[in-house]
Length: 381
Image 1 (cartoon, rainbow, N blue to C red):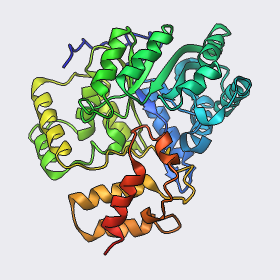
Image 2: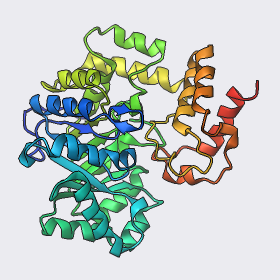
Image 3: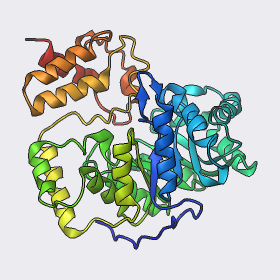
């Protein structure tokens, strides 16, 4: 593990940012299909009252409802200087350079602000990077910075470390990089968290961490893995995952997608006076990683990017969660929930293998093949 740094109350990379912990607004409290404004407002206030100020969203989060929820629950209720607001330029919403400014203006309007503190090229990978180059999206973002419409320009990334190295070589002015980084993906050959982090260090770019608890999968652990953390008796599962990510020297910010006050209070509790992971905790984390990787489960983070474009309306993340739960515990409950998740939605066997889901999956999962496995587990009985 890299050298840990001494914690200070102010972010060492971006002085306007308080602390090293941010509110990821992709998984908000919901009432049916709508954001629960009352619950979200309570979480926003609690977050700010405890000395944090970093909020992260994107145009597609909750199909546009994340931005408008932030407008209603944060922007309209707090002074602009009280918070840092991050947004992203997502590939699904532009095809030409001429599309960029109307899109950006619509994001400002949706959020109710005049500028964004950070603006990131969203989910950069080998499948979409040429679109950003062709549309001169990076140049557009830096023009926005010159015009005072954004304060910092960065990128979020889901691909191999070598590709990240190429992007940062081509765009040395990028100020910050957001990567998926957690203890399970640290050595993973598909995600390459460690290698991507090392590329950022090589290019002297501070890192923002997304998916520190891997979509919640590092909170709900298999029994054998849970036993390792139970021996420590001094923290929640989320605390070990988030503090692991925050303990590396080049980490500027760790995001957590909190969806209720219980999660908020837990996360704030251990990040308000942040303490890096110690040797005993690291040994437990290493054991937990070994136990989880031995189970060969589907490493889906439930981001739901795959769902919107599925022509068969398959609730893919839900079916993957059912599959993982069934593999861990061969009881009736997983089959029950599989039936729930396919009522009004497609079954795994309904997949027509169009590949739209795989093109947008940040984890680069072979979703079409995995849905065959899901169908065999739940439908062939």
